Length: 296
Image 1: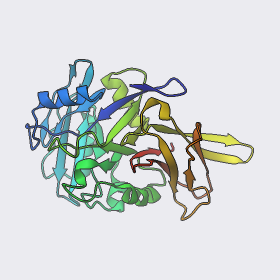
Image 2 (image 1 turned 30 degrees about the horizontal axis):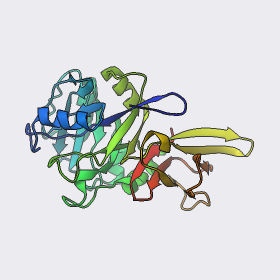
Image 3 (image 1 turned 90 degrees about the vertical axis):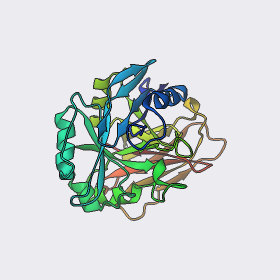
Image 4 (image 1 turned 45 degrees about the vertical axis):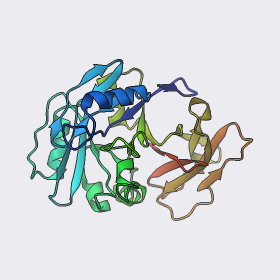
């Protein structure tokens, strides 16, 4: 858990994890030990069509989870986390029916690796009731596959919905090798409970990351309204080198802010224009790792 400049608490979570209960190469007990020792606060074990149980593991919150996939309409993988009851959608169910079942069971539904799944913007925009999409899924990239980043297709979906599709980070670990701990989500909440996790996910109080910590705020002054990203290097060892903003505009003068080494207060501002129906930001480190966040 880390604390930002306003005293808000952010808990580190992996919401997409596989074990020997499906096609993962570690047992649930081994997985929990690895994530606990790596400093995670929250873990959801989300095996394919095998719903895990909620528990406490030495102070780490283990959420009930499952990954459901279907080939109707488009091939899609939908992760459910935090359910009170076990969802049992039909394997031939429509993706929207799976999302509805997860929500009806008290959980949160996440569209997994949309770029890897080749989900179209129209499909993503048409899903109702998801808390977000995985903008980064490490096992979907090298050396296992080739589409780990979904920001572009999420932007196209956001143009349709006229609001940012919230960004989730996950490692989706199967092999417990190169993909492990490379993508995760910081969740902002008062204390570590299942109820608080679900509330924060549904309200969009989270950022996706590969290491750097930052957050985005909406601010106004006499010159207009701005999206402002604050990069806090003091809470991790991942120093921000630049911030880039993504919106419904094609080009903006203030799209990129590059930080010089001597700058201690790393803050980037992006002026909100009339047709900016969505805004998201990416924080980049010198070694090419990112954090992703959306303006609410």
